[in-house]
Image 1 (cartoon, rainbow, N blue to C red):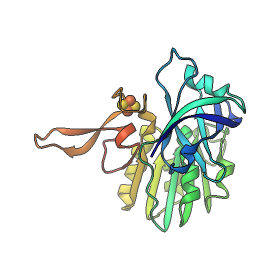
Image 2 (image 1 turned 180 degrees about the vertical axis):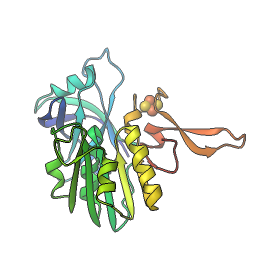
Image 3 (image 1 turned 90 degrees about the vertical axis):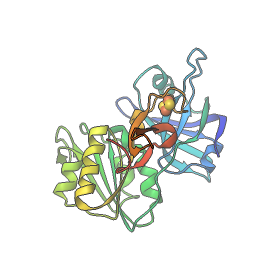
Length: 254
Ligand code: FES
């Protein structure tokens, strides 16, 4: 079930340079699960295509969804300028979220792949280790994982905080194991995490939301190759926005 409606901005906050948090009052909160996204439409009618933005927190009681996004163009600049009380058109929740599995989970987020892991970490029933990768000491959301995860491990590209290196370096250094790994971030990171999971024999889900454009199956800009082949031995394509964004790491070419 998804809704298209005019959502009211409850709160807006700048979390880091170019990274913003928006809390929206919307009935979509009733149907959302971690790993899904919403499409946010520009109020400028000349821009018809919405921006797909992942859900960071779901609060059914308050009837709100929180999204955290990086400003990358005109649409996201407009959203970053919204104020409490403003309204914005949204459609969602969209896509397939993360299945909640395992007694012991590792959630891995890289950069703007960190936000969807927060609601996931909160909803997972077993013990959760959160591994987060950032460029530098602009550790947006990291403090909010402290209540949601038993362990929080940080890796930074410049070595300013935590492990100097990637999330995979941090996982290796801490010799992390689990029943299941969930990851969201840039493709090279997903590839590294999937490889780590394969070597350790851990089931791994990846969210490939970085690839999305229109979010509604119209542009085909998000197509990725799956590992399935059709009757004519052709590799089957999958649309990240419709068939994902969450896939088993063994299901898609990373
Ligand atoms: Fe446009 Fe998937 S993002 S078809």
